[in-house]
Image 1 (cartoon, rainbow, N blue to C red):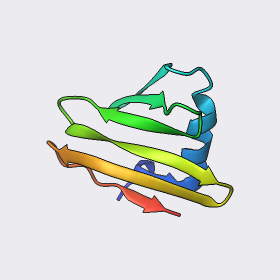
Image 2: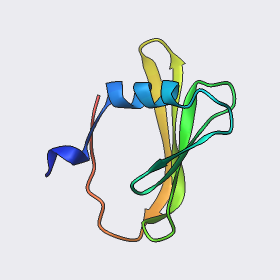
Image 3: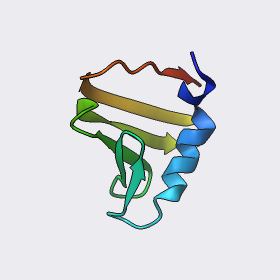
Image 4: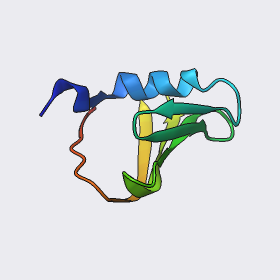
Length: 83
């Protein structure tokens, strides 16, 4: 597995602060991220060629977060999440 496929919790938390403007979209290599109302997380919508659906990352409080995943992959996508 390539190092570029590794996602660390610090990267996810940093992504939350990158979405400072409510409703702003950030373009990624396989889709778009938008801030969840309230500013404590983001929703990642995949491009149609990659997957159907999305996943959400929410900061519940310091040291506690949750990822809600609801997508079907249309192409091979290896991911390794390290918490």
